[in-house]
Length: 290
Image 1 (tube, rainbow, N blue to C red):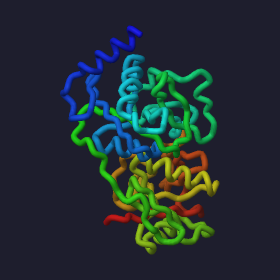
Image 2 (image 1 turned 135 degrees about the vertical axis):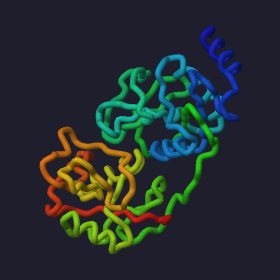
Image 3 (image 1 turned 180 degrees about the horizontal axis):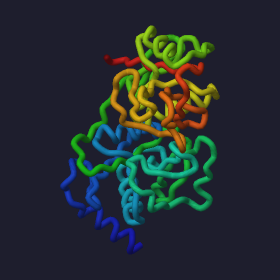
Image 4 (image 1 turned 45 degrees about the horizontal axis):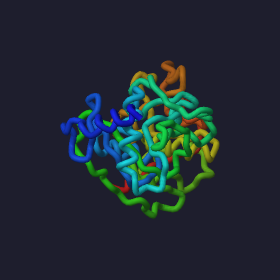
């Protein structure tokens, strides 16, 4: 009881250096969003406020967030909320979406079970313990950032009617797919095919985009060409759509450095380099907003 009282007093006396409706603790600003959504969209919303889903590095912060969430999410029917812990990038290793060291956890007894699909962590408002949850479940969420400049997430259309054979991804405002999924092509022919559809071989620039494309590959269970390629024996890579290289996740030991290569995304979710003439399935990306 004393601990709860002390925690309450701490919350009530937190500094007001963060924007309105945020709380400050350990040089971080924490915000709470009651609009329930999946893990990936929650992370995107946090990015749009200048941060990430909340990372937690000590028991006091964990308790603080649980206590504050009870007040912030009192209208929610959910009993827990998304935090930034996930194992989707490198199963079964758990990491924070903000890239900070995973040096603390408060898993409920028996968790995480690491069941396929349960790769995202939710924090219980009643006891502060974590459970591994289905990442597509809709939950409220907490964000953390050091320098927050906005408090309202930017919104984009939830759905756009893409060309047949394509699926819209809200975070990247793009459609992904292939109008002829039975064909296999070399990398260059694949790029020309995508250009003919008004796009390019897919480029990847965010956690949300990575997870979406990995899910696509998982369901078709085949390697697919993406837009990453090299013309100097794999010393430097570039995207075929001209966008910057800002997000990479190679399989261990790759890329090789003894040939000019083009890149596939494998069924294991990691990038691998192949000779560009090898025929593979093609994944195109068409930007909705140009």
